[in-house]
Image 1 (cartoon, helix red, strand yellow):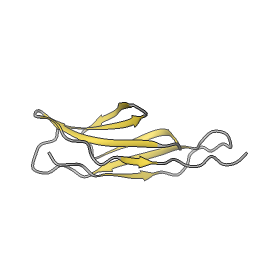
Image 2 (tube, rainbow, N blue to C red):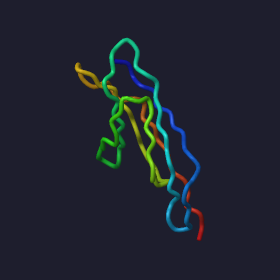
Image 3 (cartoon, rainbow, N blue to C red):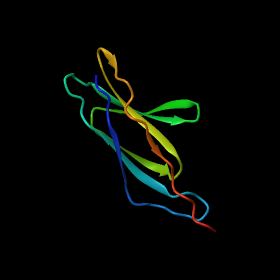
Length: 101
């Protein structure tokens, strides 16, 4: 399988407070894998030393809701009966500054 390219689209802020970082809806999308059959895409987030599986889908995008505007690191893999692909490029989102009080 080939390496996947991950892109991001951030929806408008749906909540904002001076003390709590804004909560956003984030759509992560990637290109389809060619020359092989993909049964499932898996979206992961790296949080410190831990890698968490956030979603599995047959689609080419996932929308995450209630995402705090703080640093995030995401990647995608593709899988089929022969195994799981190498991770996509790591998408690093630094987060947004918290407005002053």
